[in-house]
Amino acid sequence: MDIIVMKRITIFIATLLLLVACGNKEDSQPAQPTELEQEMAALYGENKVIEGDYPDSLAVEASNGVFVGTIDDGLMSFKGIPYAVQPTGERRWQVAQPEYDSRLVREAKYFGHTAVQWRSQNNAASLYPQGEDCLTLNVWTAAQGMRTARRPVMVWIHGGSYVNNGTANPRDWGDNFVKAHPEVVFVSINYRLGLLGFLDLSSLPDGKAFSRSGNLGILDQVEALRWIKRNIAGFGGDPDNVTIVGHSAGAGSVAILSSIDEAQGLFKRAIMQSGSVALTSSIEDCQRLTKRVLDATGAKTVADLQAISLDDIYALNDEVGEFFRFPERDGVVMPEDPYSRFDGFNAGIDMLIGTTSDESRYWIDAMGGEEQFGMAVRLWGRYIAMSLDSAQRNCVHRFLKSVPEDNPWPVAELLNDLMFRGPAIEMAQRHAASGGKTYMYYWNKPLNDPVYGACHGAEVSYVLNTGRQIKNGDRHNPELSAEVQQMWVNFAATGNPSTPAHYWSAYEPTQRATMVLGDTITLVNDPLSQQRTLIAPLMKEYISPVFSDLLDKAPWYIGIALAAFIALFLLMIWLFIRFGRPSKRKKKLLTKHPHTHVSQ
Image (cartoon, rainbow, N blue to C red; front, side, top):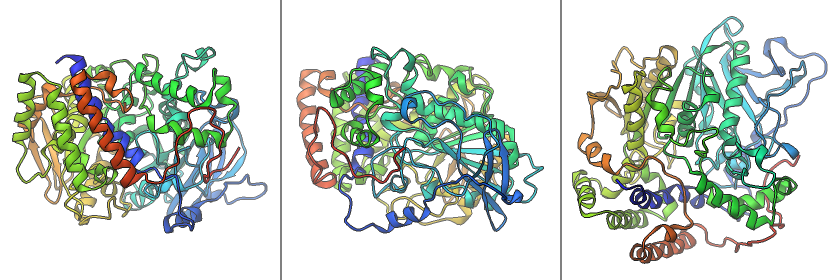
């Protein structure tokens, strides 16, 4: 299929991802702290330097210091450990560097600051104190035998469209997971987000030294993995048996880490839950964001941007952050075609890849409710059809007719496959064909509200055992939760997720064995094969959240329809989601924004 046609198909789909961010954005906060704000405030504390005696039984010596954690019912936790020199001041937009070797003794009782992002009542981590000094990680490990154990290590990379969330979010904690599975060590990491983590500054007059700035958030993760490699043995972990795990943008990060040179040798296995290398941006797309930042601030150089105060960084993030970009296919950190790395480059990494059955329904709320979402996906279907020639249009129509009638929005299923399931299959297919050990799953356990189905993120609480569900909870199935956790643990320990109750065959290019995970667990060969076949000619390899410049990319007759579509959605967003947001200022962003953060 013509590349330009494919851009037209998926550029509009990508606005779903933008609406995740815009839909959850809240500029005006309640006068009184909400229950969630109070909960997050109660978690906060500053890890202090310890002078004098400290309990040796709670201390672990690492390369950059001695960290003193806490213990509760046999579970040791170490929170807020810095894994790099913090990127503040002149280090803003610089590649993370390891902390110096040290014998400094520090507390590890509290989570580190959340990366800079807008505050939202739908995002617990954003309500925790924020700061540029966010490069920290957390470790949970069983106390018994910690000094001599060599346990498999699972490193959790949080999602959030590369613009929000953080390890302080209770849904991303590892305490209950390790209580249920003391045979593993669980680590979670923070990394830079949004404008501070994925802004390409290489084109600026002094940007030569910032050639990798479009992927700083990914390079932060690499530095965290290096710290883990050096130090995790002190926490009872096996540095030679590390599995990286992520959901959404976290899964996209796992896929990217599996595809770049810097991360090779730092982990052995990878689990990708609803994310892929498809969620990346081109150099051209990233430069559009850079221009918006320069226009908003009046800055001409990187030095000008580094001189902006932290308060103005918050205001800038709110001002232009909605035009966020994903990690950049820059040809420096990430190959311009990261899919190609699944053709043998990463064949030595064991992979477990999967998606949920109703991914796109997560965004129902962000679009204003069920009715608006149904209207949106129908319009998307028409837009997609308008962009295709007659043969390709027939392909779309055949796909929509193949969807079961009990699905209220067939186009939503098309979005599921284009944005998530198709790219996941593409990675699995290539990895398996090149000899890589690959396992595939398909999650279909729905939430309590049937409108959401098994939407994006429906499986996360089951995997992490946090007990905190999205979208007001679900019909929890404890047996499913226990079995899925054991599968993930078995994969991390041995590279094979099979359990005594369920044998899991490896994915290979012809049989395509896939474990269907729900109230019933079954191994199925090539599920939804008709949809997979129909979507193959339409599958877009890369999906970037480009919201601006849509009309420039569409021919005039599509542009008219698209303009009406955009106007409709702007009205919907205004009425249902962003009512009351102050008007934008386009130059010299100086007004300070109210945020909960710690200035450096």
